[in-house]
Structure formats: C-alpha cells, structure tokens
Amino acid sequence: MRQLVFATNNAHKLEEVAAEIEGRIQLLSLNDIYCHDDIAETGLTFRENASIKSNYIYNKYQLNCFGDDSGLEIDALNGEPGVYSARYAGAHGNHAANIAKVLENMGSATHRKARFHTVISLVWNGSEHFFEGTVEGSIRMAASGTGGFGYDPIFQPDGYAITFAEMSLTEKNKISHRAEAVRKLNDFLIGI
View (cartoon, one colour):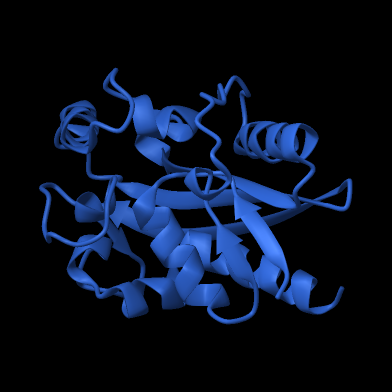
C-alpha cells in the first residue's frame, strides 16, 4: 500500500481525512515519521502555509506529503480570522478564546455570512499540486454543540439549522471544506 504523510498532528484533522481515504492509502502523521519540528506557518495565504508544510516534509524526509491550511473567513470582519484562525485570540489552538473573540468582534452584526476554506498542497515525487474546498455558512450568535473542533460550534453551514459541532463526523464530512479538498486530492491519487 502506498504511504502518504499528512503534515499534522491534529487528531481531529487526521480523523476527518482518514475517514475520506480509508483503505486507499496508508496515512501517516508527523508523529508516525518521528517529526517533532515546529514548522512555522509564515505565509500570508492558506496556499502559502499549506505549501510550506508539505515542502518542508518532502525536502527533509523524501516522503510524499500533503499539508493543509484552513480557516474561517467572516465577511463582516473583512475576512478575519483567515490565516490566523488557529491563533486569532493569541495562543495557538485555544478554541474557546478564538470563538469568544469572534463573537465579541461580531457583536450584534446582522450580516453574519462566513465560510470555511481549505487549501491542500500535495508534494508527490517532487511535484506540487493544490486542491481547495469551501463551505459557505453563517456565524451563530452563540456556540452550540459539542462535536468537531475549532469554530465548529458557531458555524452553521448554508441549508442546515445546526452547527458543525452538532453534526456527526459523517454528516460534516459530506459537506465540509476539508472533505471537499480531500475528495479532490483522492481523485488525483487514484489517477496516478
């Protein structure tokens, strides 16, 4: 079976991606290849950050790899938090603080349109390929649900009356930004 490194140790991301490519390819995390390096996301776009991660791993370990960068873009906040989604409130990965900051910055704004956007950079045998996914929705006035991670408790996808955090992983993977990008990645891998 072919191996592919996903340049992350985020258990939630690994679970979402593994559910999409189950049995087709052996998915490895950074821990699986004993990479404990702090790969700095210094890009100004999702594409740049995804590329930094995948190229770092490919160049250091000579393993086919993909990296992703994802974030929440809110129209009323001029696209924030964007590439700073994971560290919007300061500390990296403090989901509760990030949600609180978004809700505080949104206030009682009536225009609450937002989207999750993912870019995947795949480096396969030295060539780089990009895959993108987007899901449109809106920001709730308050958090709801206990599933998912990140901004899932305040993001309600268009056409649904519940947040990502109120959906099962199976439901979320049918429509999520990351699942859409991973399906495009999968289609590419099947063809090579």
